[in-house]
Length: 117
Image (cartoon, helix red, strand yellow):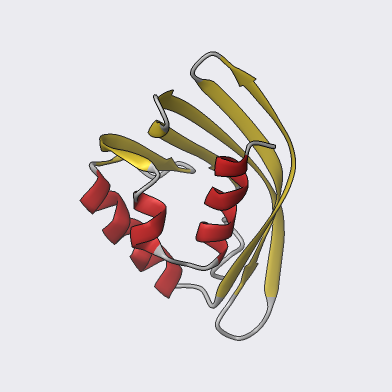
């Protein structure tokens, strides 16, 4: 797994929205599940910060990845810790369209339907 991808998951798991947004191009977009795309680094940082506040913790266990030209696909298991200390572990798949070393489009495929129940 490329070092930048390992570092990205570590940053997310630290729940640092601004550091997370630094991986995305200024005009990049972030698509989380079936929520409409959030466009622009500042808007993405705000959106992700609000999501982080809705949970107590997050832990990614990447299983594998594929890189082809400017496309990166990564998948694994993500475990969310709710504020009541219960956990939800689900599969995730992320599709990244890269713009050089930055992410132009970050598309998250994950089922969080049980997260707030």
